[in-house]
Image (tube, rainbow, N blue to C red; front, side, top):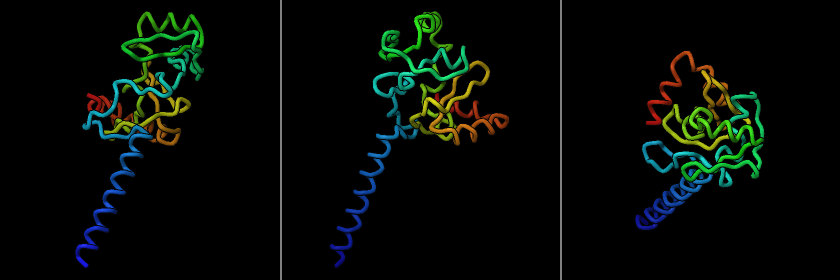
Length: 157
């Protein structure tokens, strides 16, 4: 009887562990301390899922990038909606890249990584922040006065 209960418990734990690992891999949700995340989140082989980082900051809008206007920097492919945006990015890429490698800023504030939705974004002090969804974006923005950006920066180190 004890052997059967132990087998059931071990099976349940194994299923839970596998489930958590699958969820983590699909959603890119990992504790930052594990170091399992890449420096820049890439979806479909491109940063920001192929969206134009310059458009967020200079136009204040979301624009899908075009393969004709691509740029590879440190092994990461960035797409742009125009040749002009591509050239702008090349002059100072760090000014246009999303903070925290494009991972969800809300998750980073909690010590985790999480994949983002390019439609859930915010500009603060000339920097681009991305989020998993619009709800966590609003939660994060409400925490700016309490120092959420400093918390993110501390966690991201």
